[in-house]
Image 1 (cartoon, rainbow, N blue to C red):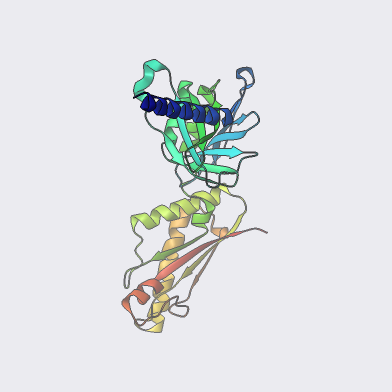
Image 2: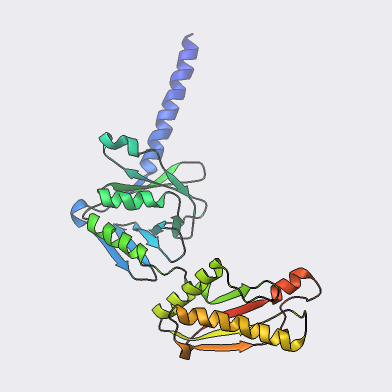
Length: 287
């Protein structure tokens, strides 16, 4: 019996010693309260609210057109490859019902980000609640702990929310090149296509670097050449009409129609013909 007690006691000592060693290796970062500063920046292209953590790096919320809000962690001297990042909100004990949601995510190089539960961190800034970031190795050993106190963040969070509402519908990577496909013999644009054209118009209005909007109409090879040429013109003209309706200046638009001359797929199959019945829209930036 005494031997069993000794074994158990030794195991407990080992676990305590291991936990103590892990705690000793844990590095903690937090900017002193009197030095805490959050910064907001925003326009129709992006919204960011960020805080520099002393001796660690930066934590930020970033909103971009057409994308989910993301929580971002930037480390000056830590590479997140093969590490696990855990983010949560520290709330008062009386608000414990608000806890329980933790975001776990990976990173690459010196940056880690997640869109999981990201709205929770924006609400935390509105309510004055601290962010808590933990970093573990692959064996779940805690390596780093970062705290970001929400000091004077309510007004900035309000500005950030307003900025989110004013973001462009889609980023340049989305609107720079779009194909609009059409039913047989039709120049009809469906609601989703109109939504994309509206996003193009909004981007052109916001980015002065856009010099031209190229619109090229195409058809499949079914039917006579002149009819296909007319149909490709009607399709291109319909897209141009919508661009003008949504505010794009006529001088920026260059429109062409090609009939069946430039197929992007074979015309020997229904799927190929469907791919060829299109209007291609491209944005050209000034050099």
